[in-house]
Amino acid sequence: MAGSSDERAIRDAVHDWLRVNCPQARVIHELVVGGCRADLAAVETERVVLFEIKSRKDKLERLPEQVRQFSRAAHETVVVADERWFDRTPYTNGADRFVPSAALQAGADHCPIWAYPETRGRRMYGAWSFNRWSFERPQPHAARLLELLWKEELLRECFRHQISATSRTTCPVMIRDMAWHMSGKEIARAVCRQLRQRSFPEADQPILEAA
Image (cartoon, rainbow, N blue to C red; front, top):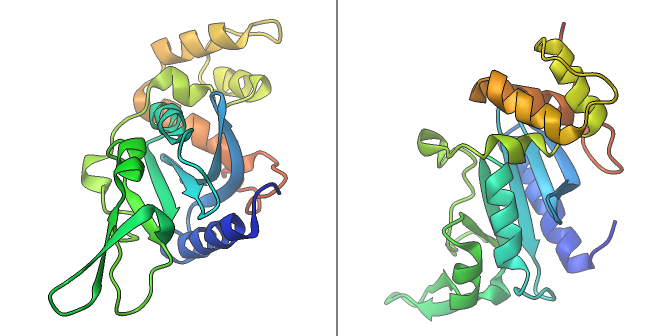
């Protein structure tokens, strides 16, 4: 797995947090999204949440494009950044207050921002609450969400939903027809179903949907 030991520490911390707070999700490492690669993805039965990690050794130049790609294809995009990328100002009681730097805030473009590490007695910016935005979940672009799937996965879902397709049908045509004939919920469930059962170099065990 590519990345520094600092990034790996943050990745492991987020993975462990998800296992406790969202046990029904399958956690996937290094999911390709558009021309970028999400560090982590938490895939529920009807929701995809993508995580971009910025360690103290990273740079922020690519963050705006990563967030743009992820936000179009997922129900939620979360940026998890090392405390290096936060400005520290003291409260009147002497405790530290952490606020995202201007560069981090600009790159995240209104995405939830989590700070690493969080320590007892020191509140960083952004609560680690997976359901904090559940009442206002944005919906991804249907075609961008479907683009997370491989050709054989698209074909399986076309068969499942009685959409005309063969092994010679191209991905753009299948995506076009699926976006036209399927509801938003059906598309979300289809993408999540395939991602939850696909094999990855590093991920939780596949989850097969009961027949």
